[in-house]
Structures are given as structure tokens and as C-alpha cells.
Image 1: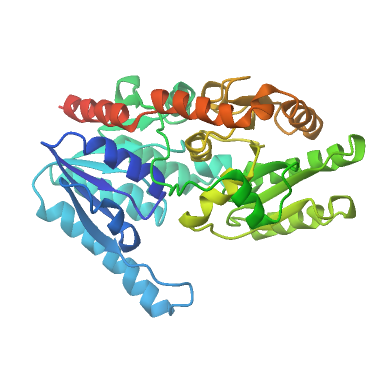
Image 2 (image 1 turned 45 degrees about the horizontal axis):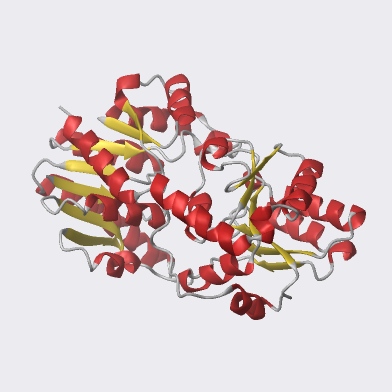
Length: 388
């Protein structure tokens, strides 16, 4: 079978996991179309052909260079669809220029006989982020109609997709999100990681990792930390690591974090975290908190599981199914700093924390059994074969 994965310069971890699962079937030929930065990741797969359709340039590059790069990006994808025999075209992320991504690209694919599969990571991110528009909904509706099959990660997402955009149930397949099998693991110990951040052995370290935006609720975590420091006089420390997706919101959060009661409690790095530094954050921490207001599913959960780090997450989206209370973490009420503070304090009294080394190993073993990319790749391949 010929399979071509279009990543749209989107999230790399999921694409790598999916391709690694698909590549287990050596009889298939897989093309990956993405930014040139990720090409080296796939050099070890014999049946994967990499097509660098987008060049990485720093933000300081001229407008002319960026414009030419985008034009080249789309022309190369158009040419690929036109010049190759009918095959499976699996789109991952289609959010750069929505009319081209959501209408023109899949329309060309269908016109030239390709079978189109789309992974719907977010049913409607515009609605989630309070930025929904009529053009956003129209282009999404068109994209979903142009696709032969749609993949969602949770049963809740399937129901929402059917309700929000009239899509036939037979067109939608629920296939789990897989573990993060791309992040570099160098064997860094907790002691080494804490030394890097200047943390003490007995510090209770909480991690917030990932892009910073309103729906991710970092402000709620800061509020809970104020409650913990005021009412319980604990030595909690918070590591914040991630890019700002909303400068205004990030500024508000940092202003709140500058409260004198939190002096010395927060270490914030508001930027993209290089792959080689990710392990430091997850090994230095005792737990990770995802205080999200709204989400479909988060890849951060599966990165945490890669390092065996317990999670404290709000009861939104599919988190209830992905986090097993008392075994891999705990659930808290959404938008409730007091409940979050209570659960954080309670967590540090449980065996999950007091026997953290054992906990990490148990979480990793459980997660690899339940979120294997080899199984996910096999199920995805079965979906491809089902398209008439």
C-alpha cells in the first residue's frame, strides 16, 4: 500500500509516532511531507520516503523569503497530489491557511483519485479558543465532507463531531492517541535535573508544560499556589515551560505569578523548549498539572507517561479516560483553584509521591501497554483498507 502523510508543519510528536507504527508493515511505502527540520527523524525507517515541502527560516527572515517559502510549500504539495498515482493521503494538521488547507488541498486529492483520511485532533479549535467564525465553521464542514474517513481520539470527540458538523457515524473511527516515542531520553536522574534548576531534594516540584493560552488555565494553577502558600505554608515549587500562544494572557499570568507571596516559588521559561531539555523538566518534577478549562485531548499526557510522571488534571475532554485516579494521577474540578490546591496537597501524602521511583516505573509499563503505536498503526492501516 502507498501511504502519504501530510503533516502541514504541525505537531511532530504525533506524526512521528503514527509513522513509526505504520512503518512496522514493511510491505507499505510511506511518504512524509513536512518541514525540513524533521527529516532526520525518519532516516532510520527503510520504507519511509521524506519529502521536505517547507523550509525552516528564523523569524527574522524577510517578508519576501517567507512569502516565497509558503508559495513553494503549497506548490510542492499540489504537485505531489497531481503527479502521484492514487494512494492514501493522510492529512494531520490543516490550520495554516484554512481555505487552501481545508478546501483546495483535499479537493485536489479527491479530484486525482486519492483516498483522503484526516486526523481530527480538534473538532473546532476556534470554538474552544473563543475565536469561532462563520468562515472557520464553513471550511471545517467542507474539509470533513471531502474526507473519506475521519480519525478522532476519543468517543466524546466522535459524538461532538457528529453533532457539531453533520457527519455520518460510519465515516468516523476512534483510534487512541499514542505514547510520545520521540522525545529524547538520556537517563537524566532526578538529582541531576534538580541540580540544573537549583532545586532542593525535598522541594515539592510541580510542572506546567506546553503552550500557554487561556484555555490551558495556567492562571488557575497560580491561584492554587497562592492558596497553598497562604493556608498550608508548604515549600511547593512550580516549573513553567512553554511557548506563549497569547501574549496578553501570558502577561496577565506572569503579573499574577509576581505576587510577593510566591517569591522564589516559580521558575518560568516562556519559550519553545528544545527536545534535549524536555527530560530535565519531567525528571525534576514530582507531578505535572494540567488545569485546562477545555480540551479534546492533550499530547502532554502521553509525554508525562513516557517519563512515568503522575498527573493532576481537570475533568475535561477525555482526561477521565486517560488518567486513572490513584494509579496514574488525579482529577480535579475545572476552574476551581481551591479544589486544585486541595488535590495537590493530598497528592503529596499518597504512595504515588512517597514511592515516586516505583510509581514512575509502573506508570510507564501501564502506558506502553495501553497506548502502543504499533497497535495504533495496525488499526490505522485497517481503516485505510476499509475505504472503498
